Image 1 (cartoon, rainbow, N blue to C red):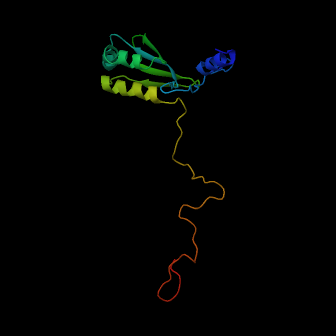
Image 2: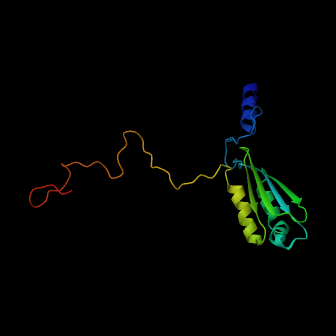
Length: 161
């Protein structure tokens, strides 16, 4: 195997750049090589608190299958102090993190919250409320271009508008 081919294979296998402050995901050629933006998922719970029953049952049940299905994500389970909240903390490759409180949630609701963190990109949520419609310069209007040559004539010979 030539040295340049070996070097190109190693370059495509490199996932985390060394010279960046925060790692970014890179595509690797091939099917099934997508890396999730979630780097670490921390589950905080208390062993005695009744509000953490759903989180404890999730840890005993489907948590192992989720961890095996996502080998590129580091899962950390921590005990919290007496009055601590049950939390899911997601740390992403762009340096951001998301925190979800899971007090008084059932096992299925906790599973949905874990899926939300696994499928999120880590980007800041933006409001879609007051966005303006932007179009390219010289683009056609949304209703098309009006021309009197293409309009149907009325009974008196005038154009309909």
